[in-house]
Length: 380
Image (cartoon, rainbow, N blue to C red; front, side):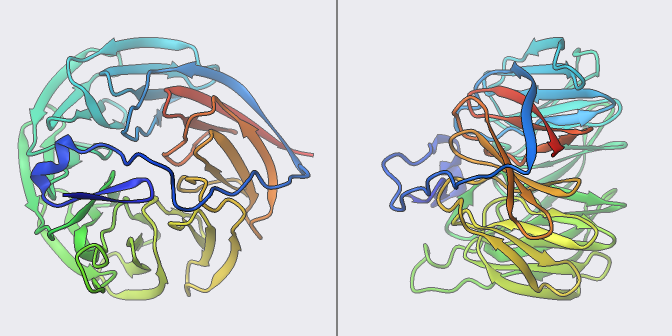
C-alpha cells in the first residue's frame, strides 16, 4: 500500500521502499502563479553545467575546497570548478544512485538504491564500497575518520572513512507508515542528530553511535494511520549548541543539543530541510509558505505565502537573502528581514528539490533534469 501527500510517498512497509515511485496525477491544489516582482536586486546565471537526471530522487551538490561535486541517478559523479563550472573529471559507477553527494577534504561519497555506498578520492578514483541495509535516500556525511550513512529502513551506520568497514550501527523502530523522503543526519562537534519516523529526534555520539538522548518533536494524532504520520523527513539543522527539526503533520521544535531539553516548539508541517542563521530559523511548510522563526523564542517573524503549492524547496541563507527553488525551476530571492521578493531567475524548467547551496558569492541549484546553475546576485 502506498499513498501520497503532495510530492511525498508513504510506504506501508520498509520492504516496499525500493519499488515505490512518485505520485502521478494532478495536484489537488492549483499552484500559485508567479508573483509579481519589482526587482530590487539583479540575479543572473553565472555559469551552467549538466550532470544527468535525478529521476525521482533528490541529489544535493557539495562544495569543498573550490570544487563542486554532483551526482545523477545513472551513476554519474562529477567534479566541477566552483568558479566557472568547468568539468575537472567525470566518472560513472555501476550503481543506480539515490543519495548524495557527501564530501570532505579527502572523500566524495554517494549511495545507491540497493544500499551500496561508494567513496571516491578527490581525483575521481573509486576507493571503497560498503553495503548497508537498504536504499539510501539521504546524503552520506563524510566527517573526519567516519562516513555516517542513513538508510531508508531506519538504520544509521558509522563507516570507517579509510576503507568503508562498519564501526557502529544504530537502529530505529519504524511505524506502520512512513514518508519516503531524503531523511538525513546533521553533525555538530562530536554529536550526530537525526530525525526519525513517528516524530522522534535522536542525538548519537559520533564516534560510537551510542544514543545520547531522544526527544519527541510531534506526537502522532488522527483517526487512521495516514493522519498519524508525523515523520521528520529532512535532516535537522544545528548550530551554537542548538538543534532544530520539523515533523510532517506535527511541529517545529528546537532543543539543547547537549541535553535534549526543549527550548521552544510551534505547530507546523513540512518535509523540506530547515535553514538557520545566527538569529533565525527558516522553514518551507507543506503548502510552500516560507516562514521565519526567532531562533531563541520561536516567535514567527514573517511569512511569505505567494509561492504556495509551487513545490518549493527548503530555504538557504545567502548574506541578506533567503533563497528557494520551485517546481518550474525558478529560483526566488527573498529579503531575510521581512520575506519580501527581491529577485527571481529561471533555470531549465524542471524542479529544484534540494535547497540552494551557497558557493562563494553565488548560489548553486541542481534541477531534476540534471542542470547545475550558479546564480550571482547583486543589489541595485
